[in-house]
Amino acid sequence: MKFYLASALGVAGAAVSLVSAAPLTKRDDPAYFSVLAIRSGSPIQLSPFSSAGDGKVYFGKSNLFSNYIEDGLLHIKDTDNLIWIDPDTNALTYGKAAPDGATDATWSVVDNDLVLNGEGNAIACGDDYQVFWSSDGSDSVCSGADALGANLLVEYYPSSSSSSVASATSTSTSASATSSTAYTDDFGVVAIRSGSPIQYASFSTNGDGNIYFGTGKYDFSNHIDRAGQLIIKGTKNIIWADPDTNALVYGPTPPDGAVSVIWSIDDGRLLLNGEARAVACNDDYQVFWSPAASTWTCANGDSLGADLMVNYIPVSTSSSVVATSTSAPSSTLVTKNIAKAAATTEAASAAEATVTFLPPNLLVPVKKATPTEVYGSQYTGSVVAGDKEIDTFVSFDIPSLGDSVKTCKLVWTPPSANSLPSTITGYKRFQIFKISDTLDTSKLSWNVRPTRGDLVGVVDASSGYFTSSAVSCDFGKKQQFELVPWGYSDDEVTWFQELNPVTGINYAMLD
Image (cartoon, rainbow, N blue to C red; front, side, top):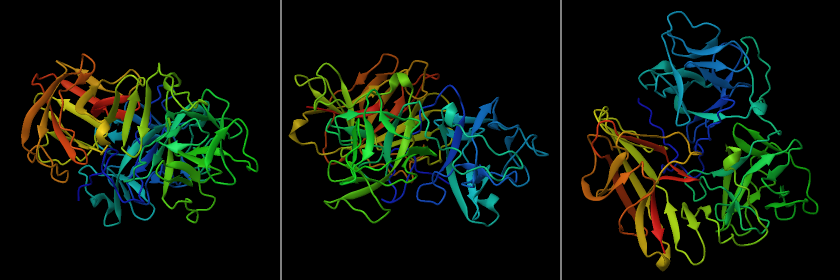
């Protein structure tokens, strides 16, 4: 049984399941991180690496720990222990020395996934979710016990909040070891509700004192002070829960009757008084906080519960928003997530055109070196030439935006200095072809692929932005394309698909 996991772009799970947030921005100093299981809709979803003090690694035990990688070895912070693969059982274990017979292994972080020798083959076995490593991706390492394959998401922490655990004999480390209410680093907050319009939508506002998932004019970042208050960066505004309406609101002073609240971060999730009870209400996805789990609903009926995932960002790129006015300055570019259309809008001024950038909901590689492998949708796009050629298929679900949109194009936006790691080498060009057949991601591979249609354009990734000639808008339908290397053997263009900042291949709709 081979495991293939849905990734962040476009593979919707059941409405109540959770998937991972877009990977957290890597911090260069320090390089300590927690490791979280990503298996949507399962008991181990977002469970961290942990220990029971027995030399084994589990998902979600009480003794949490942070890690770092040095010379390819996976260390446990503040101990002499390293994590190894037991050659007899394939279990993840820890200790000062490698088990007898252990072979060389190199740990690394690729697109914020923890991998071993370039592979991600973690499996949780049994009722205690002990972590094993399957060299062939099968569940045989569980010896007949229940098996759950999982990706390993790396979540970097500031030094003040990095937990240190798991000496070989410790059994009493608090489960809150990775929580803290003392952060000086700024972070964004995004909604996690798989298969919903608010998935990955960020905290935003219209300058009206309320908070919305993605539909406000202004996105903003936050930090938590030592009193546990959630502060909007660059302002004196604090986020509160209104005692009368349960809405999340902001202001320099609390609403009348507001009770004391403590915000904290646990395993990458934003919590209020230790609870996760965010709810999006109405068509504008205003954010409320349910006073009781599973019993409170929005006044107008439409309710979407969501986890709040924290995304740390370097101070130099943190947004400082929440003006008291209701419109953006005309001299600035405003970038915002529109949850209903899953798009980003940039407006320069009222006199200039408005461009809506729609990200792909599928980003699927096919690889010449593994011609029968079915990879599914990824966070990262890759177009690689030569003997190890990689082509990437992209699919866009085009929303119906009305008569205001006159022209549609494909736009390539190169990674910025603040984007996640990318590779652009060689001749740095790739071609975009239209495809007419509907993508079947359950079968899509190098050997099983749709027919290639007309050439849309050639991207020179080294020269900056690329805009194709006009393509059909096809509102309410799918538009699908194939990205193919130009043909030079050393060409490679690899990027992390992002909305903030806009990065990679996107569908642009212009008024």
